[in-house]
Length: 80
Image (cartoon, rainbow, N blue to C red; front, side, top):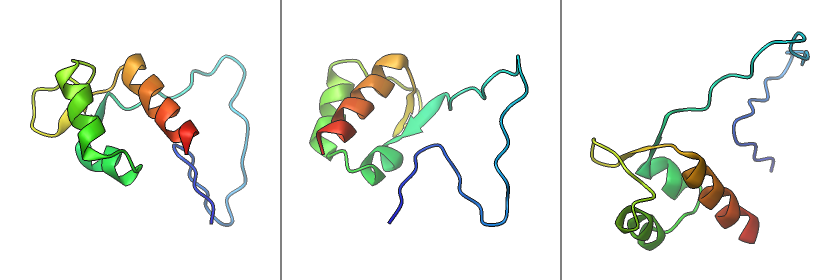
């Protein structure tokens, strides 16, 4: 099984490098509780991040994606 986060593999589509000077696409500005759960992050950990103020958001279960959130998700996934 291949798992790629942020990379779509499509059969029959050739990968090409971006042109020089092209900007990378902006990361998603929000992350949902459902997405974090799909990554395997336990509800208890998500709730801790909310209490600590790392996950912030105006809509229920939708949070602002920050560099700190990205770092914590990466650290969590690398421990597995």
